[in-house]
Length: 154
Image (cartoon, rainbow, N blue to C red; front, side, top):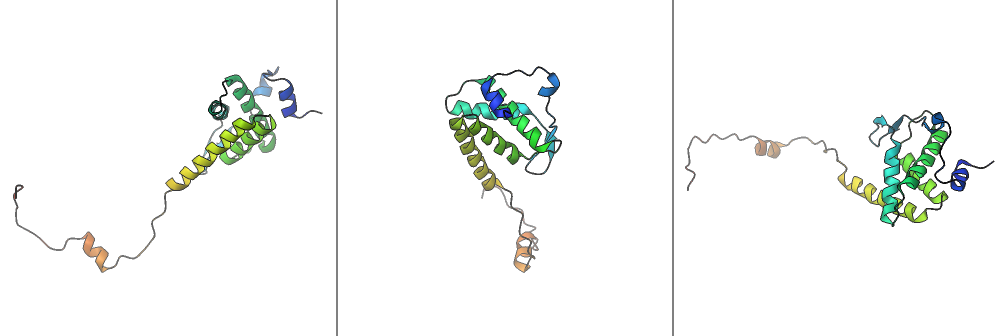
């Protein structure tokens, strides 16, 4: 029996006869910060199309079809559980490579790597807890009173 990838490869642009078959069982995605947000297949298609455009691709319909394959794989592997962003991105890479879009996959992988490095440098660091010493307190609190008025044009 042919896999879903092989069937789609054999019939690019395939339309599903049953509208329920086209509906995703995925409803939410787990963001990197742990929040659950609604699943949007269009975001996957947009990411694939941007990667394809970076290497000269112009076929938006193909990007939509590939996003559908990604969605099917995610639905099959995660069922009603919410996949994480990294899981979705890993699946996109796998589908692009298996479907013969190595150049697009490479552009996608490089973009992911750049974004990961940017996220790492922008990561907010928690302040180090330390006790205030006398020097810190004297810098923060002015203990002297200066009742003199000085003019602006000295």
